[in-house]
Length: 605
Image (cartoon, rainbow, N blue to C red):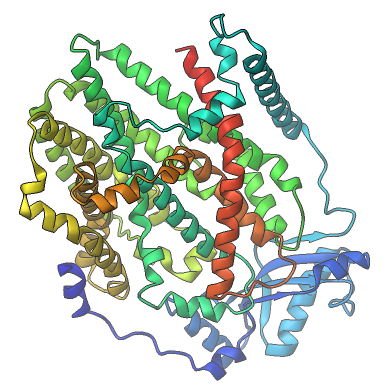
């Protein structure tokens, strides 16, 4: 915690706070008419974003601008309105509802606040006749593939039930059996290889991490929607504990570490059991194909669903901006998801914000698998090489962050979340492969170190220093995340760069210590808790949960026909509803889509 403590000495004087009277004298950030009543009376409902300006000196505009400059505030010069133009704007004449709407917002803003409202983005109008969108060719194509999956499941399940147990089963049909896939989901493996049974806490790590991701995204979307009381969100980001969500973005590095560790450790065990096994180019190609078959079918299924039938699910005043817009982006760049370059190509058009992780994971997997193939038979050399690469990757990130003046600490600012992270730091640092490279390399290093410790029968229980590090790791992680809160007003470029560079590597090192402690059962209570059978089931559905949760989170808010109220209970309820729907849909998604398509492709390999 040296960096945050040093930076506290360099804090600049914060901007003057705005009084309650001044705050509520400004134009409201959001306004929304009764959507259902508007459409029921055959009216036109329009939504748009406007920029506040003034052609003459305006103390109110100066107040709005100075308030917007405070980091923890929204940009109050950027207001959003949703009006029923046939009632609220009945006094305005125009050629089209959109033109009437724009003139209406300008008229009302000028009349009430003596300010001008210039239209910028998110301009659209809906009537009762235009809320439903026609089914087009992409919708039909996706429905065709869904039909094939349904047929595969029906045929495979019927074959499984009616086949003769005396005959050898057809492996291409059995992979589509719902009964077989259900048993795979619920299976326990206590009698399997004890070397792998030690890794049971991994499922708990994956499941709990995903729950944290759902919490974070549930909070995030409240900054993206029309909120009745935005002041609550502006106040909550100033508090230390809520800042754990915004400063805890490094938590996704757990998946990067696990991805590298599990692949490397399984390959090490495989080579140990089969010393003559070929680990050359052919082996590497099989690893890549296996990875593609594991992830791509489900990933593209959810991207396809988002690009087609998701937009037909419902409608509302915010539906075009929150669902239709994202669906359109998925249509535009679906092919980048298939090639796992969606984080680098058209990065400003985000389709399913969480999929940046899959792209980064695949990009790093290609690199780390090459390292694994080269070092798999040179265990001690691998530890030295990977240690050097880990340090070099951290230094490279330091140079990138310092030279291009990037930081991820302001990603928790309200306006940044409201604008869907429209910043180079998100694209070229947070969601870039080089930022997660230290975690990927550390995962490989952890696999080799753990393998050597097991081979040499090293007794970690007797190591007092490690036991202290292990027990202090979780408190250290929380304090490390709070370091981002302590640094939020830091003006020292060097210290900000240091923390930005070290945030993920330090977190990854602490998580690695916890993982080693779990694998060695340093604390039996935590090992048993993290190895809970429920975690095993939920952990197997990790990919399904990762892919589908964003659709539920966005849908629940896009369905609202009035302003959302931000509060602990409201956001907590949104999270619980999203989590429930996510797991309810992840079960059939895993059994009927992910597992059968994955195993069907792998059966050809």
